[in-house]
Length: 189
Image (cartoon, rainbow, N blue to C red):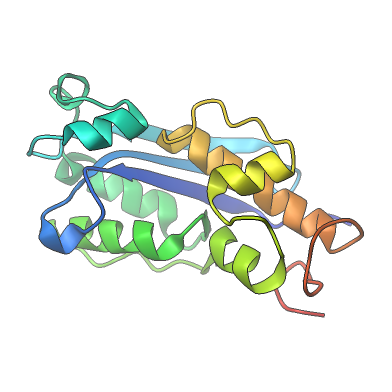
């Protein structure tokens, strides 16, 4: 029996922390992963934010103005992103952050947030059901010895979140610093 559902692992990189203050998405990755853990489809793109990327942001994720200069604007790929997410279960680490940015970008395009089958947030699961030394993506990945090469880039972070989620699901069957056991639908047993 497979304990990990099919998901679309998603991550965004942004110019800052608050879309209400004009911060924008500068990279997105959506990776559709089947129940067996195989990648079915993926879409990753740099995005031109139509504003400068602060040096502090570039120092974290390595994305520069030059890199996004010829990248599509969100509006150019909004429908593709929408369709990729529609009717899927979305997996994100710190879903509130990514969802706020995506909602702001879709709103700018006159679009609603896609109807999804649910959002699984590995940060919420970590806080609710486990006792890690810290709940950042990198801290949890290091706990499970998951390679963090490419950290703070959308595609790498989406895959790291998926690998962490697999470990969470496996932990319900045995090992892990959990507070409570979870079933395959993230319900506590």
